[in-house]
Image (cartoon, rainbow, N blue to C red):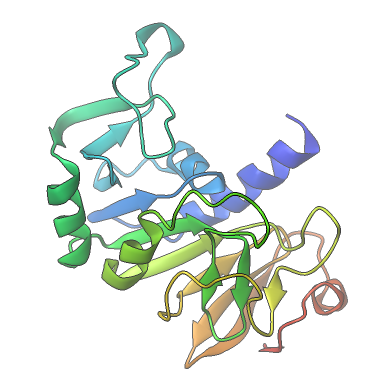
Length: 210
């Protein structure tokens, strides 16, 4: 694996520790899709908003081009999986039937609000399902790199990109640290291996407690 892949998998592995069955989990695009690799609890069921509950890995020689997740990546189906249309899928989300949503984001503010769908000045595809997941999921976990490609903090006092929802997320996991959002405040609860509190402070614009 490249250094980037190792980092992404480290974040995904840590996020997997937050999942204990029975629960229904929606995985967003990017790092969240890696989380399933680190789950061996058969009572953790994966949901994709384009219409499948019981998402599973698929071997390359068994890929069905018609069977993809919301990020257009090929997936398999576990025993007992269910298919449904998008209206029913979003009724599940909006009805509070998704226990955990794991999202990749562009920015997170110190009160727990996130921006994950638009970069000013660039083409915009639309807000997608994250807006609904933030409102409907019982618990929201963010998996993201701590800084941008330019080395700027993505954990900010306030998001500079358009926010996805006014709902605060619950947990933020980066390659440097794990934060909980408690009463609209960031609390550092864990440092990643080899990381110091000084490094986290230096690379975090947001205020946080620990």
